[in-house]
Length: 524
Image (tube, rainbow, N blue to C red; front, top):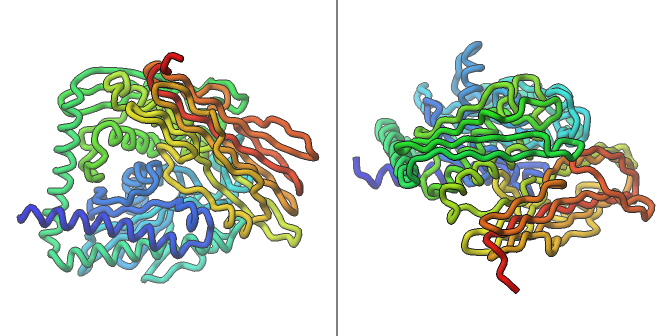
C-alpha cells in the first residue's frame, strides 16, 4: 500500500469526527451544548476499535471506547444490529460516565455489511433526579440521580422514535431542550456516517480496512517507543478528595509500573465506594489514564485503539474508581476524574519532573441551578467553571481556564441572561490565587449569579476548598476555592458540596482554586 493512503484516510476520519461535533453544536437547543460545547464525537471500525476522535472532552472521549463495547455487548445479547438504526444509552455502568451524558451510537452499513460505528456523547443539562441539573452532592444511589436509560432504539429505519425522545423529555425539567439536543446528536451521527462512507467509496473497503490496521499499528509503535524512552521503574502516588463535610477522607492511590515499552496502572489502596456521588465508573478512570498518558508521552500520536495496547489498568472492584452498581456516580465524572488526572501526573513527576506541571485547580467547580419562573416555566442551568492551571516547567500557568478532564467553554453572559432568570453580577479573575514559584500558577476566577425571579435550588459540587492544589519542585500551592451566598445584604460561606434554596435577589458566588507554582520562588 502507498504509505500516503493511510495518512489521507486518517486525516479524513479525523476531520469527519470534528464535523460531527460541528453538526451537534449547530443543531443543539441548550446553551450547555450550543455555547459550552459539552459534547464529544468519535468513529470506530466494525470491530469496535477507536479509529478517530475529535479534540473534544477528555472524560467523554476516554470512556467512549469502553462504553461502546459494553453497549454493543448489551444490545447483541437481545437483538441484532441492523442498518438504519441508532441506539441511545446513559446507564453509567454501561456507557461509562454519568446519567447526564447520553451516548448515541450509529452502526454504519455498506451493502448490508457492518463497516463502522459513529458515536457521540453529550451532557444533557437535566435528566431528572432529586435536584435541578441532576448532579446532587448527596444522592445515596444511582436512582436518585435521574432517569436510567439502558441501550434503547432511538432511530429505526432512519426515523427517530417519538416515544424514545418523549421518554427522555418526560423525565427532565427541560423537555424541549432534551428533545432538541437528542435530535442534534442524531444529526451528528448522520454526518459521521456520510463522511466515513465517502472515504470507503473512494478507496474501497479492502484498502480502508488495511489502512485502519496500519494506522492503529503506527500509534501502538509510537506509544511503545515513548514508553521505552521513559525507562523502567515503579512509582506511586496518593491523593485525596474532600467529602461533603470538607474533610479529605477519600483516598486515591496509583502505582505505575513501566517495563519494556508497556505500562500498568494499579489502583490498589484506593478507598472503597461511598454512598455519595463521588464514585467514578471504570470508564471514567480509563479516561484519566488515557489523558494523562498522552500528555506525558506525546500528544501528537494519533489517538486510536493502538495507543492503549501497551496499557493495562487494574482497579479493584467496589472502590471509588470502579464501584458496583447502583453506587451514585454523578460527581465522579467531574470531580473524581480531575483528581485521578492529578494523581497520575504527580506519579509521573517522580520520574520526569521536568515534563510535568504543578497541579491545576483540581476541580470543575460545577454549578447546577434550576426552578420555576413567575409564569411557572421550568428551567435548569449547568456549567463548569475554569480554574488556575498549574505552572509549567518553563512558563507560568494560565488563568481561568478549564483544565485536564474538561475541555468546554464558559457560558457567555449574554446566553445566561437570555435563557435563564439569572443575572451575572461579577465575572473576573481571582487575582493572587495562583501559587508562587519560579513560574507562577494561574489564577482562578470569580463568577457571581443572581436569581431575578421565581424560585430555584442551587447545587454546588467542587473540591480543593480545604486542601490547596500543591505546587511542584518547591513551588507554593495555589489558593483554595470558596463559595458564598448573599441574601439581604448578608454574605455567608457555603460548603464546596451543597444544595441551597434561592429566592429572588439571592446571589451565589463561585471562586475557583488557583494552580500550584513550579520551582522555588526567587529570593527577594
